[in-house]
Image 1 (cartoon, one colour):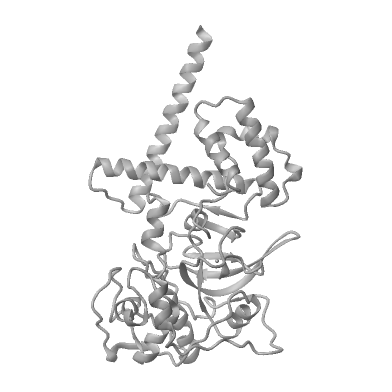
Image 2 (image 1 turned 90 degrees about the vertical axis):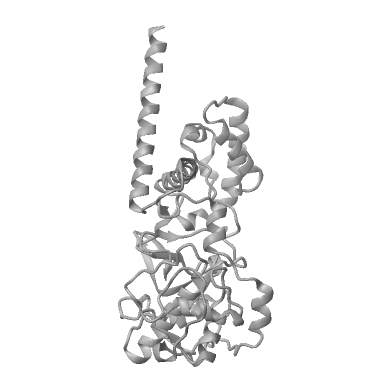
Length: 402
């Protein structure tokens, strides 16, 4: 009887410590990102979402420490948003029927890389002065296309004139609707460049500041910061052409698939996500260079990309995307969370039943996961971890997506 009381007391103490730690984490998050909610009910709702996202982040980083991932995640400004809410507000794709119809009138050309060109093993345009040091933030507005377009144009303008001028994303948002762009509802770089070309310029940021909402077009020709004489499309899937262009032309605007939680909460390392889509591209940003990460005999090629989600996201606003990896994510994921077979509360059981010697790829991992889940569900009775057992079982049944 005394032993029962002792274990009960320990359990209560551990639970209290865990709740206190969660409260500290939540309060720190609110202070850092100046989070304010309309009432206590809304705050409690956001806290539940936050704690769920923190649990996902911790699980991923636990797996990364085991060598299952090449990158880590962290809490950022989006941690109190559901996955669906984030996609709706931040990475909406422009309506293809409008964009496709209008784009037929664009002056389309395909990039032809020079022959016999020798490109460097690595290049970083931020070190050459072609990229603003400021990390901009689009806010809760899917204006990423405007930031990607102007970011690459700022680099080209610098390389032509020697002057790095901050251009107006708001100008592009407000004035390019006739070209298929939709303000805070998404758009394309092609439409943005065609607008700037036809308009004979885009205003500077200082004269036309960003507001994170759609407004009336207020373009003023006296405030033009840069012009566009033409633009080209790099063939999709041709990483050789992309790297040559990046090395010889300058920063390049691209579209990627950014719909996974692993991208949303990316922290550092080479983002290598085999399941990401090459067709469902929902987030433009721009590449500023490429390099290779060398760790002993292990090498990882990567692109350096600048995002528009603020400097608290990723690697101080940047991300290292996997390079020379079968054009992963089409420079890049289906709408499903990360494959996360490990959970703290059942990790010990998985260690016992998974044959790790057979895990050499995602396919073999799923095969072993299915065997493990079936064995665990049959042989082990979970109480507090039962929901995770069910979730893992669903994940195994759907080849990793849950």
